[in-house]
Amino acid sequence: MHDEAKPRVYDILAKAFMQEEVRTCFALLGDANMNWAARLSEAGCRMVYVRHEHCALAAAMAYARKKADVGVASVTCGPGVTQLITALPAAVRAHLPVVVFAGEAPLKSGWYNQEIDQAPLITATGAAYHRLHLPERMPVAVRDAFLQARRERRPVVIGIPFDLQARPWSGPEKLPTPSHRLLPRPAPIPPHPDDVARAAELVGAAERVVVLAGLGAVEAGAGPACRALAARTGALLSTTLPARGLFHDDPFCIGISGSFTPEVGLEYLAQADLVVAVGCSLAYHAGGGGQLWPKARMLQIDIDPVAVSQGQEVARHHLRADARLGVEALVAAIHSRKDSWRNDAIAARIRDSKPDSQGFEIEPGLLDPRDVIEALEKALPRDWEMVNSGGHASWFFAQMPSRAQENFLTIREFGAIGNGISFAMGVAAARPERRVVLFDGDGSLMMHVQELETIQRHGLNILIVVMNDGAYGSEVHKLRSEGMPEAGSVFGYCDFAAIARGFGLAGQTFKSLEGLGERVAALAAGRGAAVWDFHVSDKVLSPTIRRAHPPAGHARA
Image (cartoon, rainbow, N blue to C red; front, side):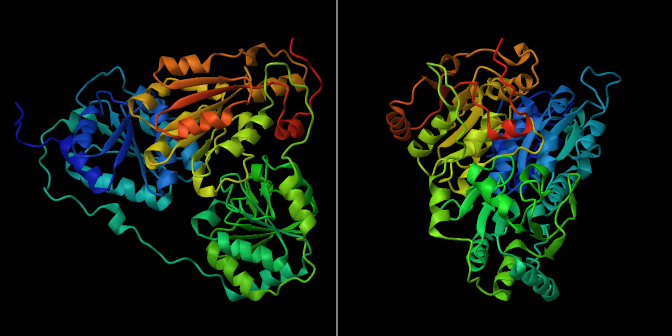
């Protein structure tokens, strides 16, 4: 018989998490995590109880990105853990520190319905898995999981049999020193003078320079240094998609580099003879292999420079340094360029050019998604948080150039759709004082539409903007380009506004853009969640699809 006055292992585990300064946890409860979660909630941690385990982890990923700290999620054993497998590779590739409290089947049982060898599943995604089977060492193991997540910037899943969690605690009373007190905090790495001299010589020989900043530049605070380098060299500015908006107010920023590059950006990148990539991973979809700048040499400024990335030869020239310190040293080593690529005509062209000028015939009663984005760009307040999901619609949503990077989030490293609503919940939990706008497609939102109830129940301040083309956009356009049947990618225009109201949220269908400004003003005056369903034509192909899958003119059967 248990001594009810004596703490259980799950009590100590909850204290170990609270000592790691965990203040928000995204969870779906089951036998193997519910007692621990109850104690964590009683200790003051905000619990966001989702409707699907995948969404718990995906929300924690966005929370980690926005907070620049460890995100925490919890699921039960067996099927709870298997539901994490799609989100984990994205967290690994996005270098997001997340700790997942996962149960394991009870050790005392000879057979258990939900038992599965969880470790191989988790490690196959690139995440770490820790089996915690010795109660007395569990607090140290929890600390070590947080330490690993922080140091390696990847997810760590800890599995704890739930019969062990229920045992009376017989270990030490004192908890170990938490990870945030132990983690080394090395100073930023300065560049070597010889590397700076070689980089300065390379820049001096170039005539048309583009300074390309990635998320590493954002994290290092290198934005002002990149602007200074561009001004001194007469360069244009660009960013990767995750860093979109870093130079939103600079007249010589040509937008995103990569799959989401606007028309004017494609033109100028093709003319560049040097790209200075600052804090970029040089991923394939960012044009890292030079497909967008065939005439240009590449100089990479990064603490971990690479020559090959995602199967492509990328930078041949490197400056190993912290992004900010490296760029500042380069600025100090070069002279201002007299004949600048910058002029009033280029600034005007960047300012006045539409992201995509291709003409399409829009059916009556439907909208052009590009017009929707242009109207939202004008109407939505600048300080609202933006979350861009995946899929065909995401190209259009990325074309909102006036928005600052600190109010933008996208995580696309595994190419999965269906994550947007979870990311929005994570951002809303991290920035409760802000309105969050999720930009999503109809197919993506339908994957986890049940989380509308989570948003309503927790009072999350989220506006969901749906670009509804009645189909899986990428797939329908690819099938058409190949002359294949479209039936498996076309579903029709479901009524998202009615679905939202069924979950207790406000819902609105837009088949015209009249009155959008008034709708935004009314929403801005209060709090609460809403779904705005924009019915758009599926005849409009994003430039990304047009380049990769040239349309063959096949009409819908």
